[in-house]
Length: 418
Image 1 (cartoon, rainbow, N blue to C red):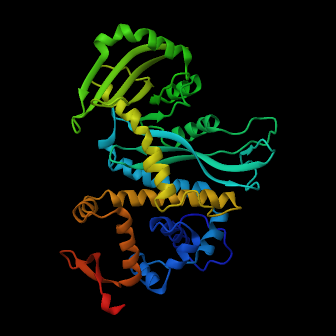
Image 2 (image 1 turned 180 degrees about the vertical axis):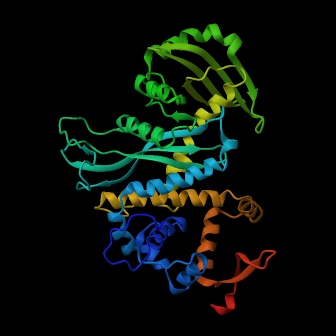
């Protein structure tokens, strides 16, 4: 963090101290700068210094620094963390066909009655009132255990050409794909996305980058593809349709069907349908996907599963960040687009750290045995930082020749000394 550029004239705090303070706002799920300042009591600051060896500036100091810091610097920091996980094979067991599953989706951050930054997209109501909406497109690694890790971000921003249409998710994807290929040139991925993405441009980008894809498919997306799938359905049903009870819940019945090699322009698409229903129930859930992966009896269930896994970018991703203490839609910096982008990257890094913590086996065991929630665990963490006193005992280790080689730091909690 101290290697990040520093444009300040007066440097009371190190860059690492400022960045860490902003990061703690999201790690401890405070939800605003004001609530974070309230947390930074003398007792908290003492424990924080004992743990990290860093001082805590007020959040206004953090805000002023983030206004000047180029957003790509924190994006690079996030990228370093993600590449560390990939290189250490932390995510390998969640790959499909040797590839990481990356969901792509857009979301709105917050709306404004006045233009917050130049080029911000806007909507005009029937009465002529303009509302500006800050939004972005995310590429997120999703895993079956619930991991939702941001790897690339592209903000919506209109160009200077007033005759050009406003920026949108489709335009942003072309830019996002370029960044993703540049930053992760050798990373094999399978893109999963909603029904907005089945189009020739998307298929071509994936083909050129050697990416595979599984997309949600709805009637009306690609009319000719849908019509051909429906015409082939009776012919393929006898050999390509399977049904089974769900292993975990026998009362749930699953049916799956697939059709291969449906032509669309120069692309060969493969279609599959998954239906889930309760025994003796009238209602059923239906999911249809298209992919560039040839489907057979052995991989059809997995292809449908990873296609349906796309919802994790909304639930474990955006919804958790909006309602799980991170307060994604809060205006951490209302008027400065530079700072807005930096707060967003700090949020993603904080969420990444917390996910790695919350997925620890001992945390899961504690939650299960004590019948507790993650919210209560984080409340205890904050309470410990406020009330207890964390002291350290350092042990100097020696090698065979008697030379010092390492220091161990052991945490001691001493409540009576607070």
